[in-house]
Length: 375
Ligand SMILES: NC(=O)c1ccc[n+]([C@@H]2O[C@H](COP(=O)([O-])OP(=O)(O)OC[C@H]3O[C@@H](n4cnc5c(N)ncnc54)[C@H](O)[C@@H]3O)[C@@H](O)[C@H]2O)c1
View (cartoon, helix red, strand yellow):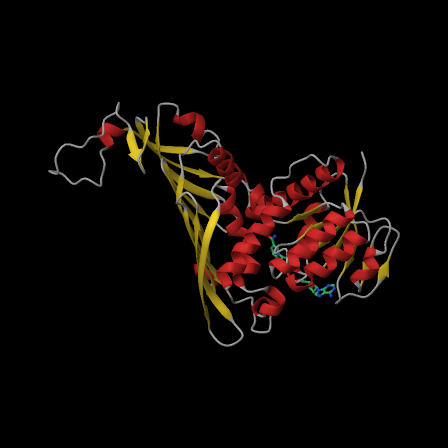
């Protein structure tokens, strides 16, 4: 089995995190890093470069991971592919779709593999939901709501995050993760995007919100703020399908709840969720429909007639409430997602027909939505 040599460009917080998790993978060796804050240094096993151009000249490196601030992504990704390297690029692809187009052109000219680190796609809860959504087990997804209250205590005013010419702003720097996740949960196409934002001063845009309309009626609301104390940091994704309502908690989703209308075979579906705890199982005729108050007249629901959502009939007999939770630490789940996308990249290098869980085109689409939301 071949060992792939990796060079990480941008060795800040995230570059070090990547190194930590990739160093535990078989067939992978991080042999070089580059950061403008470091001095050139070399041992037989490991090299440090101040200039990323020098790392690209190292013929031993097969794959370059780019974890610099976003403004550098296009130039480094294009140069890396021209230097014969495959690329695992941190999100966002670029500051705008014009930059992403340049990368796409260079990829086509060089034939190198490039993936973008939308690592949330590999989260076990989200990948289960993607699979069930594709099978239409839950009926249609009608509404998605992402609320992300992030702290800004570790983001001083001079951090590159606030400088739109370096980060692209919140929709592009952070929102792309969640635009991509909602895209992955539906086969509908985006037809309209509207966004609003607030800046606390000329340099710090700290709250953004976007509404994305899809062609079969899915509406997704995204809200991100970087303006609160760490005590209130919270990310929630609420998904309203025809048959279940699902709530996921955590920026790296670790747990959630589901209230599901189902036929008798609900345990087949729910069994796919890790750490499942079924709380209640009711016959729908007995559970009643709380939208109809007592005395309203006869409800048409019975165990045999099923229910209707947006005019579609579903034969269901049970109303099930359950919770689920990944039995692992957040950092381990995060780290395994980073390992998975690198393994997908290697699989694509070895077999061009391999389909990774998230493609460059997926990353491009989430950037396009972010760009439109910010217009
Ligand atoms: N996929 C994820 O889950 C995830 C999570 C966090 C960050 N990120 C992405 O990773 C990237 C880096 O984020 P971070 O939080 O590590 O930022 P950071 O500021 O901690 O690190 C960036 C590093 O890049 C270095 N750098 C800047 N210009 C350089 C240059 N010309 N040559 C070499 N190095 C240079 C800086 O010195 C710094 O060490 C961003 O694109 C961010 O969006 C992704």
